[in-house]
Image 1: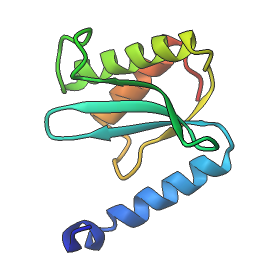
Image 2: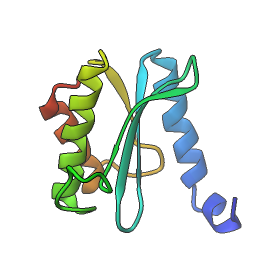
Image 3: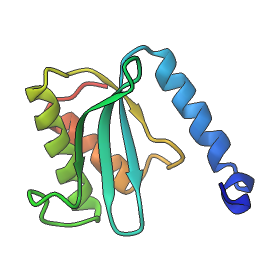
Length: 116
């Protein structure tokens, strides 16, 4: 990891959030946002496997990495998760604040039927 990434508290914040989410014992809805895209996946921490994934790179998402695209990613992820038998997850926002695209993805997942 770069010194810059460690020094701004992002690692500490991500670890703190992840520890609380893992302590809940639920499957984890983990997100990542880059400058252009949004990625989300449902992870089973006990087996260490990704059960479902969606991103703004999927062909089903038309708006790319903006707020509307993030909401579409959330709905797409929820649809795939429900097909896989997952309906309750814990939201892992990682080092990202809960606003903008992160919030839009969460609201899209809730609208799609996921509970967290």
